[in-house]
Image (cartoon, rainbow, N blue to C red; front, side, top):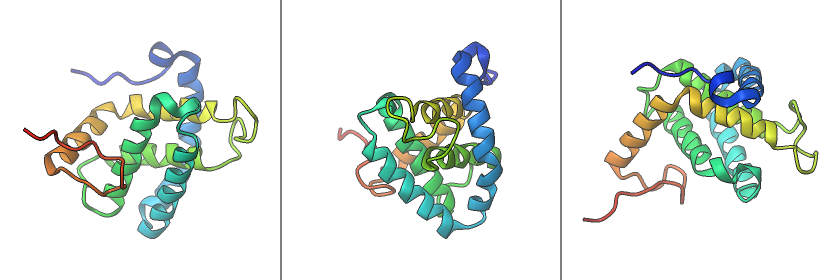
Amino acid sequence: MAKQRPGKDSLGNQGRIGRVGALYGARRAAQYLRNPARARRLLEDALRKARDNASGPLSDVFDSLLALLRMARAYASRQYTTVPVRSMVWVLGAILYFVLPFDLVPDFVVGVGLLDDLYVIRWVLSAIQDDLAEFLEWERERNLRDSIPGTVVRKKEA
């Protein structure tokens, strides 16, 4: 089954905004891939911001955003490295875009400040859906508990 590339057909105008934002973040993401300590700080900032905005515009992608953060943390710690580097650049690009307050629509603009962040996250989720599904399966197989406390779906007891 061929991967569908996100864009106008799958996400409409949100896809255009998402792709532009993801490209903006991706340019800076490679620096974080090479520096695990810097990546760890970025992920902590992103987790804090995600939790602060869990009930707002991000509520429909909150669990998926947490999964992206867990995947990035597992990659940075070299626990999970089977994901293509291109996908990790997109993931870190989306996380950077999300964390930085000054982007296409600054976060302090009440009511719409996080919408562009939402579009970027959705675009990246669409772009790496197969890679994220493989990561989630890897995570389930290992019954991970504390990659980011309180965010991992655990196996159901039989």
